[in-house]
Image (cartoon, rainbow over all chains, first blue to last red; front, side, top):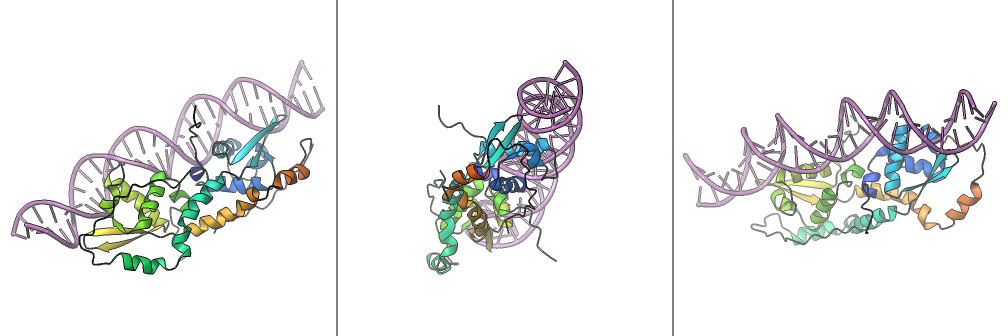
Length: 124
Length: 124
DNA sequence: TTGACACGAAACTAAATGGTTTCGTATAAT
DNA sequence: ATTATACGAAACCATTTAGTTTCGTGTCAA
């Protein structure tokens, strides 16, 4: 009775170029599968599978209309990505990091002990 | 003599939880492989492979120091992700999209033709 | 009611992925 | 000089992924 233990997360979902392409296409308007697949150099079934993966990650929503299934973009789950990314922004936004690293850590550090930090996932 | 045709891109690189974990760990300080792998429930070799993939995507840099290879985070390639993401921000930031979609497209649209847009990847 | 269309399910395949163990080699320590 | 350490390369393996073709079913059109 918890989270549906979704098999595909946002990170995985956007890893594939075809799926990123799909997201872009569906941003403009809702479309049925056949129309969508006409934009791709692969079978309708293959596109359908990609759509399923995107749906599992919550990135698209489907709606049955007559005999067709229309898909549309659902961008909200990308916020998780945004959150994740924001954590790393300081690493490139703050140019002083180069100096900071130089000060904190010397090349000749003999016997430096590395902290065994309890690493907590910054995600979700 | 063009782009090195890198096998792994940023999207793929961050798709794996272990690799995201690695990025987080290496944000704090540079570390040699053995120390890094002590944080993971898998062999040093396995971790080494993940590091390689991250390196191919430009997300970590390695530096040889004596007999060890030290790795550090290189966050800059994440900017590509940020750019990609920013494209989709309007979809969740602009609450009016719901209305917009409703106006542009009706449920009873018979014979609606879907634009065959030339879809250009917003990436890179 | 018969046929065409839209779609998902299923079975199958090749290749990629994520992991292992074993081994060779370079460097450091004794 | 010998031994121990740090690491990557290679070979191997199971699972997942990304694609295919075939088939069944529901819906619309003639």
